[in-house]
Image 1: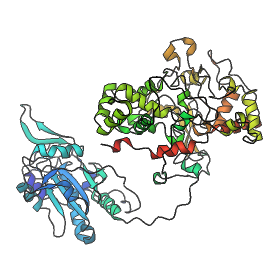
Image 2: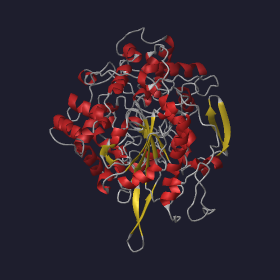
Image 3: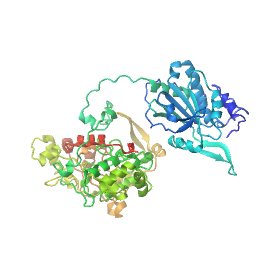
Length: 632
C-alpha cells in the first residue's frame, strides 16, 4: 500500500479532477479507477431501465457523530440511500478514498439539483471503530458537508457491534498484521457501495470497476421515477400462462416474435395433489408407493416446499425447480444439458418429472431404483447442487425452526437423510398426468378424441415405425416405456465421431453463423465423456445405452434425448427414420424406417395427443407453492 503522511488532510483535499497526495505524486503503476475520471460512455437515461431487488438492507446499532446510538435502519425508509463502508486511514487510492471521492462528486451535483437532494441521503460508515470514533468522524465529515445536503458519517462502539453489519452486507474485511504479528492499523477489503431504496431494499452494489458518480446518479433517479400507469393487459391464453415464460418455439425462424409472460402474471392456485394417488387418471395404473413411505398430504406439502427451496444447494442459489421447471414440462426447454451451481456444466438433459412415480429406474443410465434415494444424487453432485455431504444438507435444514416443525408433523421426527428423501419423493410421486386425448380414445373408447391424422399416427407407432417396441402400451394402461436401456448411436457419436471443423451456431432468430470448432473449444470446458449404462454395469455391451423415457407429455418436454440433441419432435423422428447412428452396440430395433413425410407428420400429430388434461392444474399449483427460503 502507498504510504500517506496525513490521510485526513488528503481526504479533505479531494478534488473532482483527481487526488491531492500528501507526500508525492502517485506512482505511475497505480492506474486510477474509472470513478475518478470522466465516464467513457453516456449514462443511461433514468427510468429507461429497472434495478432488481437484491435483498433487504442489513440493520444494526451504529453511532452518529454526537455519539448517540442509532439503528442503521433509522437512516433508511424516507429517502434513497447510498451507503459506503470505509476507514479513514485507508491509503489505497482505489479503495476507501475512491468511495468518498465519488460521494463528494455527488455532493456537488446535489447542490445543483435541490429537488434531488431532498430525496437522497449519503451515509459513510467506518469499519474501524477503534480509530474512527464519533468525534473523529465528525471532524472527518466536516470537510465534506454542504448546506442542504444530507451526508451522515457513522461508526460503531466496538468491533463486536460492527460485526453483524459486516456479515449482513457480506463485507470481506481482514486486519493486516506485520511479520511480527502486530496490527498495522490497515485492512484488506473489497470496496463496495450500496444503493438502497425507500423500502430498505438493496437495488445495486458497486465495486471499484463500476463505481462512478454519473451512473450512480442515473440509478438514484431511476429509483425515484414514478412508474407509469400500466396499460390494461390483454387476457392471457392458458397455453401461454402455463408454458415457458419466454416461449422459444419457432426461434429458428427469422420472423420469430417473443411471447414473454411476466412472473407477476403467473398467479397460481393450489390443487389437490393427492387426487391422482387416490384415483389415477385414465391411462395410468395405481401409483406405486413404497411400504415404508406411505403418502400423506403433509409429506407432499413438505416435499413441495423443499422442491422450491434454494437453500438445498451449497450456496443457497439453486433449487430442484431450477432444472425441473414446472411450466417447461418439469424439465428445462432452454438447455440441451443442465447447468448447476455457479454455471457448472452437467453432461445430460434434465428429465421430466411427470409420472416419475412409475419409473422402475431413475437417471438416464438407470443407476437408481427409488425416488427416496434418487434425490440425493443431484443434492450431492458437484456440478448440480454441490453440497459436500449428506450431513451438510441435513444440518442446514435442521437450522430452520419452520422446517423442524413441518418434519415433526409429517414424520414425527426431525429432518434426516431418510425423511428429506421421503418428503421430496412424496411431492414428485404426486406429479401424475394422463387422461390425454389418446387415453380417451384408446382406453375410454371415445372415437372422436383423436383426429384421423392422429389415428394414422397411432397405427404407425404400433406398426411400421416400431415405436411401441420400446415405448410400451399395455391393454389397460400405457407408461410408454419398457424402462430398459438402449443404444441409438447418439452417445457413440458424441464419444467417437470426429467433430466437424466448423459448427452452425444460432445467434438470433433465423440468424446463424459458422464458428470454428477450435475457437469454440478454446473458450469451453473439456466435454466430459459419457458411456451411459456401461458406467454403472461395467459391461462393454452397455456402452452408450440410455433409459427409454416416457412419451407422456412429450410435446412439453423438449429438448429430447439424453444429451438434449434434438429441439423438436420432427428432428427426433427423422433421426429414427434414418436408422440412428451405426456402431457395434446399436440396438437391433434401430434401423431405417423409410417413412415418407406424410407418415412423419402423422406420427408427430399422434405424439402431440399424449398431453394430459391436468397439466394446467399441476403448473398452477407449482406457481402457488411457498418459497422455502422465505421462512427464516
